[in-house]
Length: 246
Image (cartoon, rainbow, N blue to C red; front, top):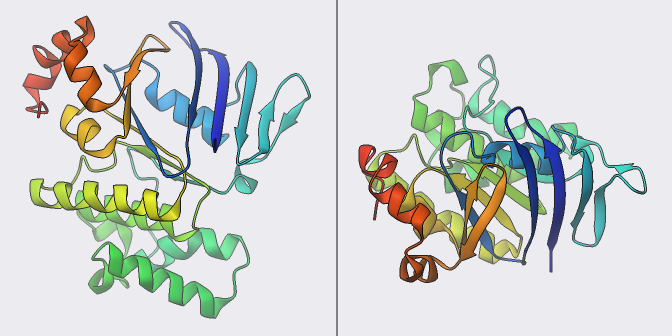
């Protein structure tokens, strides 16, 4: 077991209460309607939002434990995060954005260049290396944010709508590459999405979130066979509006 989580946090409209684990090389995709707590959970895991109680253990290291007053700072968690708004620096070039985390960790300049160029190539960003982020398209910003998250070789990867800004062809390629990366790196990954296509293509397991709780989990095939009330509602409601059903 690589990631073990039991958390409670009072949100504005309801309490977020979750308990789950994610194995090495496994991707857990959380899907739910707007305001169900998916993005708040990523903030709690990353350390950008403080739980009211609970415990987070990653690779046998306790990142948070309110009972024993443990709270590992964000910069010491070695977690790669891609937020829905990308959170890249508009005044920096693509290269500088991707290199940012490595430089904060005092990685030697020669190694920074090698690793950044590797991930620029992986995400087809080589030709944009010297372009400032404020000149990028939405898809280019998203790939830059992914490269920045991956280049630090994180122990845990957190993705908020990881392929939403890409075109259909690029989405399919990125889903495949993300799954391959997580398995080859042998790290746990948690992704959140509104899209069933993304959830079923990315996830080894899918968790359905509703008002701060994970109300159902299973493999994509298991959830399709169960045909839960939530899935029926989602397929016949919000997902059809965005053509996100598989």
